[in-house]
Length: 152
Ligand code: FES
Image (cartoon, rainbow, N blue to C red):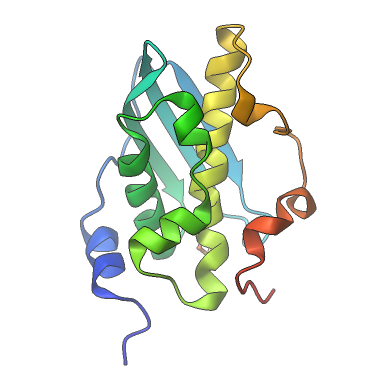
């Protein structure tokens, strides 16, 4: 039996939104303390709405599929709406990932938050969804993102 469902395999083979926006309004990177892989997200924002999002990753197939899905989910959303999207929402849309790969979906959630934080910093914007966000937080602080079965 395959470990990965068809949707995950398809997004891994044909990911959407790969690359980097040249004149991005916000850029964020996140490195996973679990596996050491990296994710970079760049955003275009117009009137508080995310109009484009691209990702680059030094990460595995699950990170690629998660980021493809996550970038699709935030395009067209307001910054506050995008900040509410968690890795669990991404996992749900993907139809799940094998337990040991759940942490890979955290990369996209955290890199999106970092990119929105960058945008907010540059525009002196206070966003409700960033109230508790600490760009230097350790993985312990993101622990709730793992409660669904991370077994590291
Ligand atoms: Fe590192 Fe998947 S193993 S992102």
